Length: 172
Image (cartoon, rainbow, N blue to C red; front, side, top):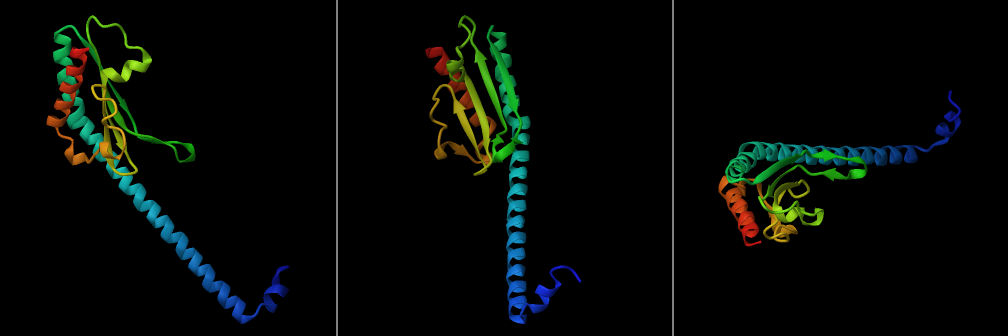
């Protein structure tokens, strides 16, 4: 017998039964919480995968096509992709893609002004939307209203956003 055996022998059937029931309920609560967590993680992973496909099949091709036209006219551009990455303490780096324009004849943008020459599409995993930030209208994509469902992001929408960015740069 273990050291606790005398204590267990003195435990009433009522206490033993009550503790067993409560511990069973606790275990079920833990299982349900883990199932919810696993389901949310699977949904998040699916959303991120769908965004990566959108980035590969729609966003990058539109950015590359626009960049080729810009380059033909002596301007430069860059495309930067960021991967989704959970960090420590629940922090997450969202997936995204940024299209930056470097117009010929304009100096290098100051770090504070860099976003004014860029167009970005970034995941918002917590509500499964994509935020669009356009330097032409830098605050338009902020907040909950600025989130787009993946299905709403088409080549046409991306082209319109590129044109909006370039129009703002032309106006200076």
